[in-house]
Length: 203
Image (cartoon, rainbow, N blue to C red):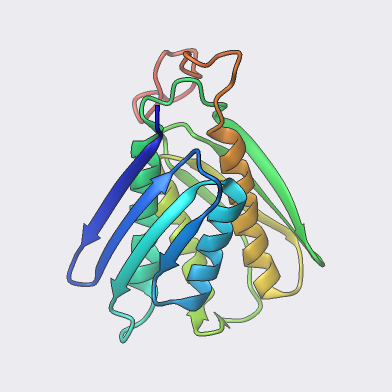
């Protein structure tokens, strides 16, 4: 079965389309109008081995907030749809990624229950033209739309570029493991409750 989905979002603020292939090779065609965000989403694709095509037009003359948040929503929606009933997935994963002086960690549960813990701080308000506060907005939007319990933590580091890039790479590697099909339970739902999602508070 091909685990692939497309999603689209059209508002007065943004127009975004994406196609996501979970079992890809890490190829991408991404254009958001925000160079640094493109760079981060390319890292997400390359290191998760998900193929991502995403085109976005947003109200960048105002600021980058709407485009950043809405790309997270659209990618999360496509991710959730591509997973289908989630049978056979590994579900839990974590990754700790170094980048020069920086070390960051992501732990996640593909649970259907969205929750973000964000322990990442920046010493500067901008990276290039992008507000660093918007990175949390992207992770929040993605976790909410994808149904992920997501913990993101920068353990240490000085360079702001390295800090956020290591977070995206850690997300990518954790997702790569979590969505992989477990050969020992390829038809099973990874929950003792027999379901995943908002209705299941544990399991």
